[in-house]
Image (cartoon, rainbow, N blue to C red; front, side, top):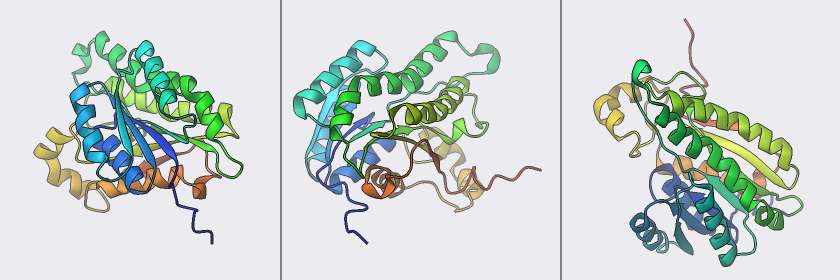
Length: 259
């Protein structure tokens, strides 16, 4: 078996929303595995901190951008192009959520969440397509990894209507993009379950024991879980997989019992 089946050494990856949470877990895993990593998020300070921390493990830079604005998305694509001529991996992770009761859920929450969680991955992939095409190789195409959610696979336990709908849409968009961009660019999605992130901080603080107990593996996700799956989907060993949404949830959705 070839030793490079699961290697990302020498590849360049862009991870949006990569300064914290699952995005940071993935970025850290990729850079530790030998990839050159560029991360992006809205906040300049967060970018500076992430760049400093990630650079302790390898080559990493950070670029501030609000991807809900297509003009800033285009600016990010231009800055990435100024740093490298080829982009092997794009991880569309930047996202937002909103919670409110059904009768009180605001229209503005739909716009905010849908624009960032669903429109932005499509737009940024459009803007970076030429760089991804340049990085594609026979037997090892370029990769797009969309970060969905189990909230797009099953009815969420929270009233986050626009978030669940956006993630379900992203899972389907992954299939559509995979069809359109094959064979030179593979497009897959990861649907994480509960991980210790800012988005899950309050639910885990209030209901952590219950959430762990409901999980078949009796735990929540660890940084290594997110990193390992992203590395696999970025490496040559996954070159025959496209259009898939892979639950990363300890079996919460894949073993769901209906009574």
